[in-house]
Length: 222
Length: 211
View 1 (cartoon, rainbow over the protein chains, first blue to last red):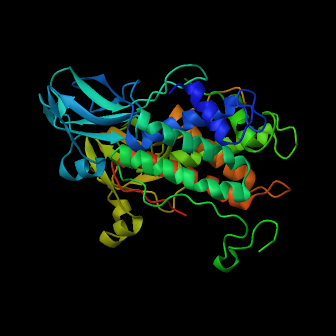
View 2 (cartoon, helix red, strand yellow):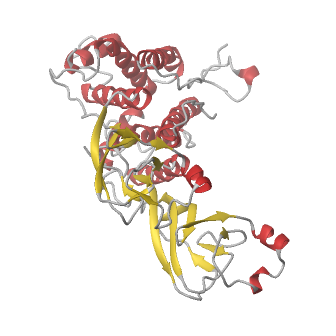
């Protein structure tokens, strides 16, 4: 599906009678929500991935994550995947920072935040490793460009954007739209083969801190 | 693509039923929103640990056990001295082991603590007689935004979650536009983003939202 068609679909489902010149929302607003949906889809399902080179030298163990990658997932040295370890484990197991802890073959890596990568043991030769990781999608525009996901993901994007658009209405409208965000999370997790979010955000309106008062809505009608 | 604060505020404004990023209803101001953004960014970096800094500093021979934390570090994760990991302890542990530890401080630092010290300082258990290199790894802290014409520091993928946090703060403000329900919902969506970021940092597959 093209992005402009998707935005038109979304606005139609939001009951805008003239989706090309909507009244309650703008097409630009909906476009932001479509890009938000692609971002969240990527963070859950790791949809957009690429690889990049990482030059390592003999003097340091910590390197910047390649600029095109925003979160490293795996690292390859001469065809072999390095084992991922948390920094605390490396500290417990080995003095990775000692200058004589070196090898021609790197064996382990650890993310230091998302912007740094630690390679262990320190390489005895300058060489290039391959980093596989998440990349950010190029923001889509309100044109005839194709949505950069598989067709089965399109309804999920649509659900996300509709629920997101209804946030500004609040109240019962947002409460009812909550199911759409859950549908987005379900679709993305099932289609992406991930099961990472087990407790969904929920919207409660009225006095939410007291369970006994949960039925009292904003205009004080039962 | 980098998002600038003006575009960010436009997005926030529409969610708050404002017509543009000058917040013409007067319920909020641009300056206020920039402050909310500063708050949100610090909170996001603190909670997720996505941005780390690796600082090497030379410790002169025979210097004091008291060290000043590098200014760019928000919270220290790890300290190493001459390639060896220094474990974090409490000063009480030092006292329990040897009440006179401060009088016997020359040697190789192996522990550090930051009890009863200002946040900018930490103490090693030994003064390195020959000096050495100390490696700090910790969370990075950006200088706060002062103008709406700057770019958002974080990668685009985290911008929607900063927006959720800013919305959460804006909607909890006292006044006619206060909306606790929407504010709490925005906070939950923000925390979902925090969890997704933590998952990338730690590799933990299981996510639960803190309420």
